[in-house]
Length: 445
Image (cartoon, rainbow, N blue to C red; front, top):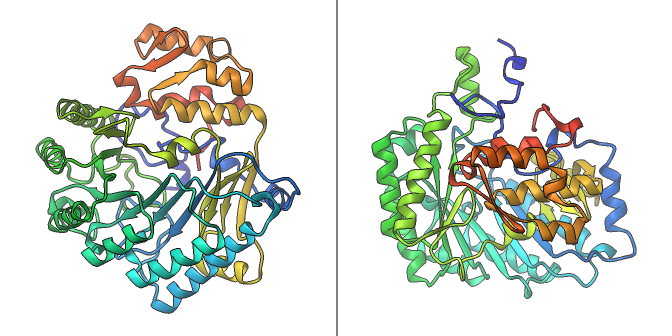
């Protein structure tokens, strides 16, 4: 079996789960990002005029206790304390280059996001020193939201005190499942007991925006287990619940095993089953008083519980991506950092931006990017796109919308376009119809 067996994208996802990326997180596809556009980032940040878009900051912590079998992010489980110190120091050198550039003159982040990997892998002392340096280099005092991803087994009451102390407003717990056997089978480092203790500590410390992540369709997932997981979440009563449907990208442990065994279908639930499970979860959550606010999220109080990182980024905000393999978006230019930690550190220590690939987008590509990302919210305002881009969605994509309306996938109410619940739960499989011809039928990453 060769890699090409798995290359063809499975955009429709109507049956078994095949290998490849399903979740559409950006546009144009990553496979079109290139070396030639890397100098564009340097030119932009050194241009004399500061940017005007809302600014965000993403910080990647690439360290984990274990690598999950379904993980496709850049993570390391074999680094010693010296490696960690070097990395943290390098990220501050990278941040300083941006902060001192003309494009960021007078600007402060409106949102900050710590992702991974496992941000909570770092010690309380490391987190305190890191965030103090970050605030000194690029102050956060105007940030509307600071999100911090956590693996429950790395949390103690002391560490949570530290996390709250440096300004985290949105705590995201990577629970994924409440069954210890399924957690172990999927390579997770934590167990359910640690989830409950971490959540209790966080509530006791006064975190008022706690998110819990679940994954529908993990290895050995069953109807009974999934129903129990949803019930457990409702008992905990977090402010936000995020549910992803299991996909199997090419750089996961699950795919590696599939390749060794010559299998085309991943050993996880098929797409109809995963979507049924998410639909059942949302029904239970709505009965418990939650509101579904996107294809992946339900919140207890949509008036007070926001996800500013998502909403700003999906509306064209600038974002500095710090750290190995991080993704950023500045002035219509997408970029990704170097993907090996030693090469990343070497480059930053030589006082160069560690950018591996980039893409200077055209106005039409920026329009499509924002449109496909906002479809994930389940509703799109046509007026907002006319005001910003001068383009009528209903005219530009009349054939798609007519077909969706015929199938019951979209409801048109004046200016507003609303996705049905069934369409929302398979929205990522619908978005490729909006791609420009040159991006159709391409590999996503």
